[in-house]
Image (cartoon, rainbow, N blue to C red):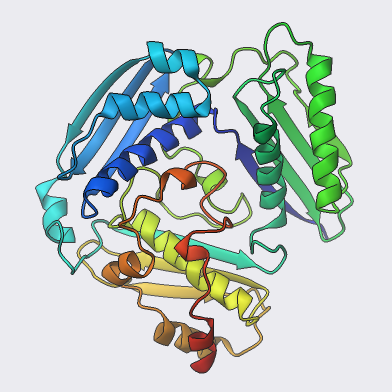
Length: 366
């Protein structure tokens, strides 16, 4: 029986991704000046209007409009960056939440809300990410890097793999284009990218659908409203893996929606790279006002190389899941978050939650 694995990826110029990038650019600006900043900021973009709202407690000096316009310019929306109307409503963090989390700058941090998160890793790819996810992400990245004049800034893809047979794989790819460019030219150009990705991942596609709506001239915020945190599956592992209850972008490390999800990925990747399983999913559940998760569950889908009780015990001895330790161990007070806001949060080099520096310790406890 076939098992379908599905993943989606979107371009930097997609309206939702624009908002993610603006939110994380604001977060980084806060952390660059004040590492103890408390930030929960979101954006909405629609046509020629950008609204920024949220709660920020920081000693940083912020110029929100400048940050937003620079982000739009960096993505490629040059004209929009100059003309868009920007409104904002920012308040300090709720005193009730602040009291629950701990004073700003405190070394003892508790969860500011309830939440469930998941981390996942697999030996199926060098990045320990699902193969459908890597195909979708790589395709979008390759197209973006070329910056072809026949394409616009908005685009998306959806990859469906028929595992393990690889017989009924399909890919859907839609990309914005200038009005003077014929759809056939766009399809021909994008097909070349699909064929290269297919060869790179040794994955044939029996169905390739490119710009199925035909004309795709109006794109980005001019065609669709964007919101921070609306592309959660794109940000994590694709549609075949559980996602927690909250989005990532625009939130500092005290927000367990983000920090605990990074921790869960860190642990799951250790399990895979230590060859203790070929698939691993870690679930963490937190309660407001608690320093530690109230529960942890590890699922290896019957691929584990050691008894699950032993593995669970080794994980508990090797990792500190408290909110404070998570922020410290993963260096989440540094301004690193803008580059997570596009092309996914996981499976990319350079981030602390992708390192496996505790592998020896984990194996020692088995």
